[in-house]
Length: 210
Image (cartoon, rainbow, N blue to C red; front, side):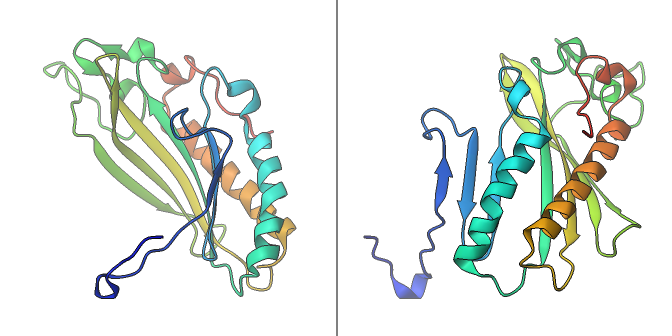
């Protein structure tokens, strides 16, 4: 039981379910609240075989109807999907040097770095929002952010997300929402292919649309 001064606000609890404890490191989790349903799936070189999009889609299709049935939301406004890509010594070893990260050789969000410079240095912060023509009010967002160093080497994260509105009248239809999930996934993959350089994509396997 937690006692709070009512003048200081209220305490809100959001149930979170995970296959691992926080000490082990969350790698698959669901957050359930009346306002929002969130599913997180972590992937790594060790788990990549089972952590492709079909696995996420399967679990989402399994748990979304349960959330809809339990909370019975009157209206669902938005669906958002986000891929968080970690760029460090493990994922792009050929582009990590003693001087730093050669980001200009990995992603196309930065202008070419001249020979008088060693590399891009932290703090890293860049955001680009792109409105989509196919669905009104939908957009793709690209964000470059700082990430904890790995083995003494600098690291960054590149977030690629797609956000779109739920079509009125389909709020309680899991199949329609899953169709939108597929649509968001495809938009993210298109951006993935566009934002990474060909040199970088030879170092890791691009995610397939299938």
